[in-house]
Image (cartoon, rainbow over all chains, first blue to last red; front, side, top):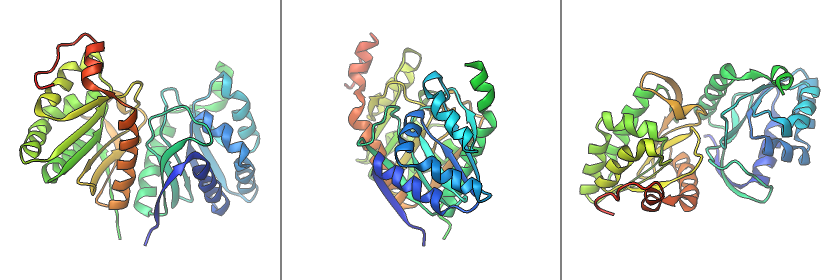
Length: 153
Length: 162
């Protein structure tokens, strides 16, 4: 039976995200606020993504790319992640490993610090992963290639 | 065990929400973009909410109250739904009935939905998922502004029962 756990701090959510990437073998998909991406570096999460890519895995991410997030985005692109930009995005986030394990939040706030309380959902429920993956793919199809966005900026 | 169903159109999502409100006995909580409230009213969801409240149930809702949607929000308030306003609220939505059945979406473009648009929403009776959604709802509710205060800020007429 699938595990389903409510995660109540951003710090814990990042730790869970890190574990999901570490245990993924094929693919990681994510939709994250730039503020969370910056915090992810403190947890060495991009290094784990890079290791997955070096082992033949694939990482796709969507975020809002702006002048303030350019450095972070460039580092992720350098690590081999495939990134796209979405304009209207705010608040909700998701990270899915191998289309099975996920952490996500329907949070409506857009400003985060590491010790902020949040409400996120960590599960290996297949039906829920399918829902998140479909949501990610719909957003991906509407998003702009990161390199094009960087040129615009 | 299959724990949920993916819903792919706004029309179907409203039909599911209608079923959730209709089968609820105690409480419905929702976080919905204002344009969806208008569409829901066309599908008589307000009548379902009225029946729930008349039977002693409770309904609470969060949306972004703007001048364009004051009429739709006032109609829901007049039924007896407890409403709060959330500034800069994006496209995610949820409807949870009796802490069990729910439909939710993380569609980031949901703000501009029309009836025939495609969406990705998740319909489930999983109580763990409902608990997560309700926890999110309560967190947002605590930060949201009372509808009456928001209507006063917008200079709107005070709904009759407030």
